[in-house]
Length: 330
Image 1 (cartoon, one colour):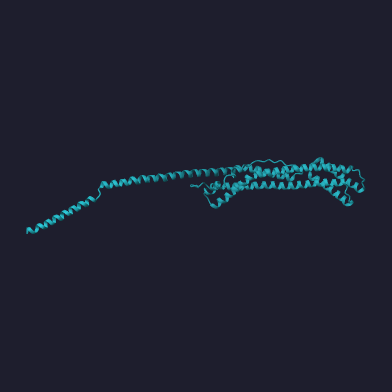
Image 2 (cartoon, one colour):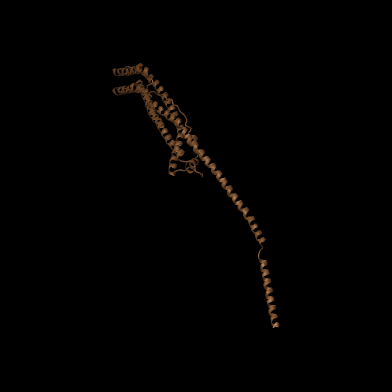
């Protein structure tokens, strides 16, 4: 019996020994707590600095953007305030210039003399703001301003187009007045020159050493009566060109024309006289057309100046009262 148990015991011992060795081997493959912590620490040493670096980078980008946005909001607010304030301050200047244009138009229309009317001109300085780049004003009043898009666009157009007109009309009005001034002086020179020739022609007619029939004498008598009447009125209002045309030149032309038609004569001194009369009439018609044209021009300036400014002011007040700078600006 004992002999049979010995091999069995030996086999069990051998099996027991193998199991123990296998267990020991498996246990040696299990990482220790110290090793695990070390690996985690190594991983954290990599990930934490990288995370911090990324956060710092994005924080820097954010701060830079916020600072840039603050600058854009500041620039937008400053540009809006400058333009709106400038438009408001132009009120007196526009009224003064419009009034000057209106007064000039009235005096040009009513004058009976060939001379340039005086004109009090004042600058609006609208070109100081009308010259700002369109892209900047669009950002200031449309892109970076809150409010209804349709209303913003409509009032922006009124604001910019109004300032553009007011900026250009200053030089335009001054140029037009200089044109009126120089052209009127030219007409005055032509009138004086032609009138001297007319006066000499009258003397030549009266002193001509020719045989004069009754028709010729009657004509000269009629012309002389007209001159006497005109000279009497001339003492009171010698520069009245309209009166001179109506009461001197036009009757002269009619009488001499009638004389030519009745006699068929073309005496040199008579032909010379009617030629000078017609020269004066041409100058008169040029002056009359000129004063009508310039009167209309300056009257339109007066009306349009005020209307355009009123529309521009309404647009500026809209942006001042109904809009504000956006929190985030482009």
